[in-house]
Amino acid sequence: DGIRPPLSSQPHTIHVMSIGRSIDLSNETNAVIAMEKTQPEKMTLREELLVLERGLLEKQKEIVKLLTDMNERDVKINYLHRENLKMTHLLGSYKSVLRKAREEKKIEMGKETNLTKQIDQVKYSEDKTEKKVEQVVRITKKGQTDTKVLVDSEKNEYILSLPNQASSQAIDETLLIDIGILVIASAVSGVIASALGQPILLGYLIGGSLIGPGCFGLIQQFVQVETLAQLGATFLLFGLGVEFSVTNLVRCWRVAIIGGIMQILFVISMSSLLGYLFAGLPPTSGAFLGSVLAMSSTTMVIKGLMETNEMNTPSGQVQVGILVMQDIALAVMLSVLPVMSSSGSIQSMVLILGGKILGMSLVVIVSRKIWPLSLAILQQRKSHDLLLLGVVSLCVVMTMITEEVLNSAEVGAFIAGMLINTAPKDLATKALHLFEPVRDIFSALFFSSIGMVINPSFLMSEAQSIAIMVGGTLVLKGLVLTPIILYLGADLGVDLEVSASGAVALANIGEFAFVLANEGFNLGFLDRQTYKVLLGSAAVSLLLSPVVNSGLQRIIKSWLGSSRRRSASDGSSSAMMKKTSSSTEDGKHDARVVGAGAGATSNGDPKHEA
Image (cartoon, rainbow, N blue to C red; front, side, top):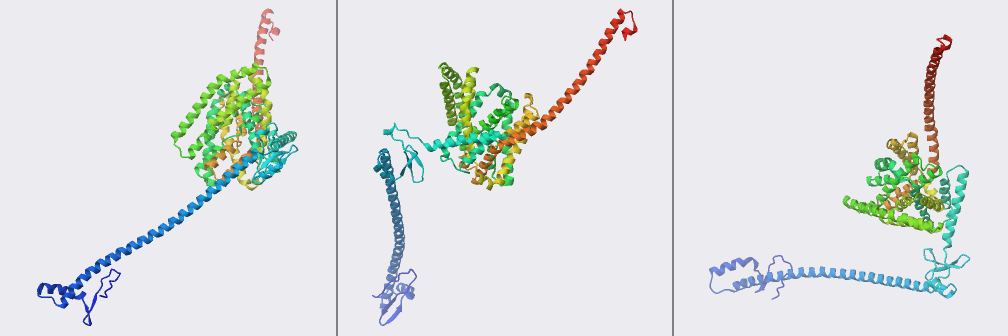
């Protein structure tokens, strides 16, 4: 009685209060066991107490073990309880977030549904409906025709066009005004550039820069105008394909294919090396930067050749051949870049390219049979309008196909022009004659739209980097292309003047650098700073290309042309001297013969012989 077992698991001593004194039983346990063996007689009180103590110790061990198990179970229960509380709290938070998201989604769907219903029910003459829509968006009147414009929270404007009001015309006057401003700026700047003796392309670029966001900001719908102006590049390459001769391409295939590939690979390798040494660019970024810089401006070069009437000269044929090869390489790069960014294997890239090439080959084979027949049917209608619409339609169809297959509408435009060229000569000439005004208008808009992306403030802030990239590209491509054209074009009669002129004309950064650079930036091949400097360099290169090309061409012709004329004059002088000497000897021989004849008839009179 009165014994309370301790809660700890340490060994304990039990004290039993008996006969007025305390007995330490734990120290005498072994003695009791020995006494039991040696004294089987009747147990004394002490002995009974010792036996009792042994039983109590056994019970104590069991109790301690049970208490220990209970403590461990309580710890586990407390831990599980705390974890349960945490999970309950997290579950409640998740339910709250999910409930809030569902409510927001319902609100947004309700807003969209109400907005759609209200827009569908808008009457231009009902003020009450306008007030209801005013709660969600704002509807304003624009222009003298009271055209209703929908304005959202971000101040984007939309022309309201309702099915039940199909008879009323809804015109986006802002877009029409922007196009008109672009056309006027192109015309005025082109006239000024021509009056100052500068290339017209320079006027287009400067005019576009003045009305663009970087200067006066007269263009409101920049994206729509730029998209429309892209038709200029498509139509320009289509016209090139119509005028291009496959026979001339076959003649200069060595310069076009081998030279084009050599130039691209050399620029890529040098860009990787120089970018790593001086700018710290990774090899992949340097290689991609080189692939962008290797592309020349097809439209700029072709426009220059047309203005100088050098399209059918050896230099013009060589330049066009290399440009065609660059456009094909551009289409290939746009096709394989997504595969490269996703760590695709070489086998997958080869399969993708093979499938694209096979598909385009089938399209070209089928089109080669159909297109001349289509043009012949259009010509039988004896309508210039139908023939022009048919030609433009064929161009658009092919660009849509190549945009889907090769990610390049420009290649499709060039192929479409070459297919038109397979028609009878008079029909192809007539189609090109009708198409030229459309091409010229849209090409002017295209070059002016390129000028709109030029931001003078950014160019000033990055002037050093842009100057290094533009100047380095000019020097590198000029030094690479001159020996390539000179060596591979030897069988075409290409001399140093022709090769240097072609290299200088191709030593710019193409307008499709914007497309390729944007793709590389989105896929992670370029960082933001390099991307912005590359775009600025492309813009500056296109801006300076007409002036630089014109100036360098004059220097090359004056230097190498005078040397060639001097060599030709020296050669002609020596040839004249040889001819005169030969004529004198022949005259002496003839005089002797005549004299001999005279002497024979005059019986050998020395005077006659003399």
